[in-house]
Length: 358
Image 1: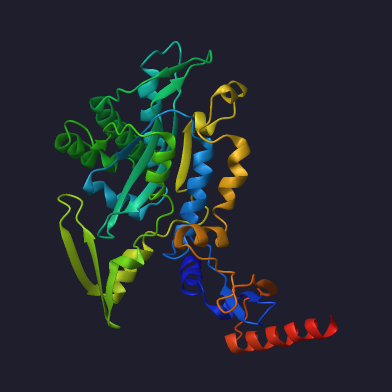
Image 2: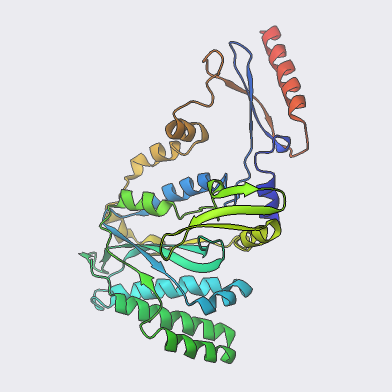
């Protein structure tokens, strides 16, 4: 409920914000606070930007592969009814990726760097847990030697992931899961589907590419076509054949599809593995895709004003009337319902008081 309330009140002026004033012409502008919920379609973009930036600082300056680990459709409800199983999904992917690199040379113990992102939704908003994984094409040995590895074995990934996940689930669910487990082996003789095609992307390009999956809201507002008070119409391109599909469903059903994807509080939807999860002194010799002295510059791009300026080409703090720089004059942050008109009146009186005293 906390995330839902945050999202509903996102951008509501009565819940606080910042008041700016133009020192030249006295024009006022109020900027409401956002909800800081990763579930929110509006703030989700900002969350995505911050997570992408944070992730890019960890990347080693080598090619990375974007892989997707999917599960049998009959297993989805197990994860819906028991969210703790999502931890097992992460653990299964991590163990398979680590073993694939270890098999290259077990004595050297090559360790890759990888980042896992959990998605619980498909394009139709239905429950479909799967993991996007960004994996370095290479590993670092215990004796500090980097080996480039571009061949990812589909056969190993598919079979190993199927076995690892089913074993993890059986250990939690118990003997009642044996029948489902046997059925999965029968229906997926070649393992669960894993997308791992070479994409030959440099770290910067890969970061931007997978950034769209980080903190992405369940549905973008641009995909909601119509709402008449009782029905919601939205569209998507079907994953199987990219066919354009339009759905119209009751509002309550639309809300149900959305809220089931809200993660548990403090649950980590993004997790790091291998080199990216450890802090060995020897790893410091690896060249990062973005050098530390540039981190501050990259973070500055994520600031509210800079992000709008770079994305839309205009300065939100430039007075629309006289083009002067606007100044912050007041903050409203006590989350009490105050009308926007009252805020403007208080700001104007405060502004007049400052000018008369100067």
